[in-house]
Image 1 (spheres, rainbow, N blue to C red):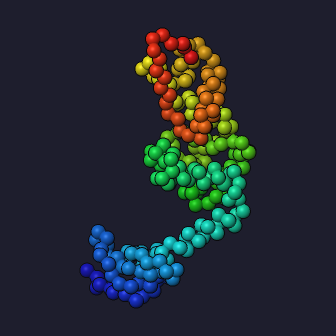
Image 2: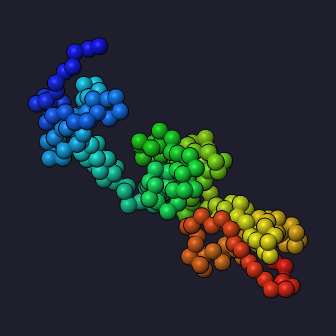
Length: 219
């Protein structure tokens, strides 16, 4: 067993060790003060290995600078990029349960570099009015699993996996169209208009339940 090393008073990057605190599991931890004024508990290994050199303020400052220096933080493409990461990484995002909560993530190449994402987007047909779409809805956001589609096409994709329940019979819109010999695209368009009128076009609508008394009209 190695000799215990007291790190009190030592500096690691912007961090000054104030003293030892309770272990985190079996790992030694230290109370540290950052040059920015923040006080934080940090593991001994992270200090000695150089992994932790600040309370996180340096990384946050770099991210903020990056978001402004690439000059596109207000563009639609950057908002798509930001929304994609929020859905996968932010548990407070309304759509997180359908993305990050189901294990969907953003690939490392894109997650750390908007410019890489932009280069892929332009090379793969991105234009104003288009939306990013995952080919495999259970797969991650990555070059091999993503494409650009019109908002109408993406909405149709969502509608195709949305269920409509009428008097306990639960079918997809495509199945209702087949059952009632209705053109699928016509039915998609009707539901798309309904979703738009209800202000749900940016939501993950999973199911409509329609209860009818007695006989009911077919769709």
